[in-house]
Image (tube, rainbow, N blue to C red; front, side, top):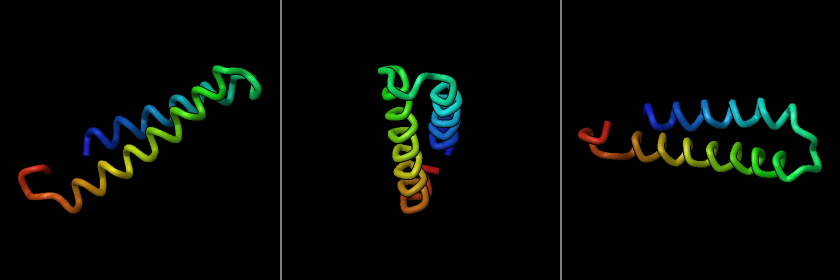
Amino acid sequence: MKTALALIALGVLAGLFASAADRYSLTWTFLAWLVFVSAVGSLLRVHAVVNGEEEDR
C-alpha cells in the first residue's frame, strides 16, 4: 500500500506542476502523462494488494 500511496503523491505533485505549465508545451504533456500513468499504476497496485496473498500485504 505504500507503493500506491507514493504513486498517488507523485500524481498529485505532477498535477500541481502541470497546472503551472503552459498547456501547449511538451512539459505539460509529459506531466499530464505522468498523472495518468501514476493513477493507473496506483489502481493496479491496490488491486494486487486487495486480491493478493496475505504475505503480500
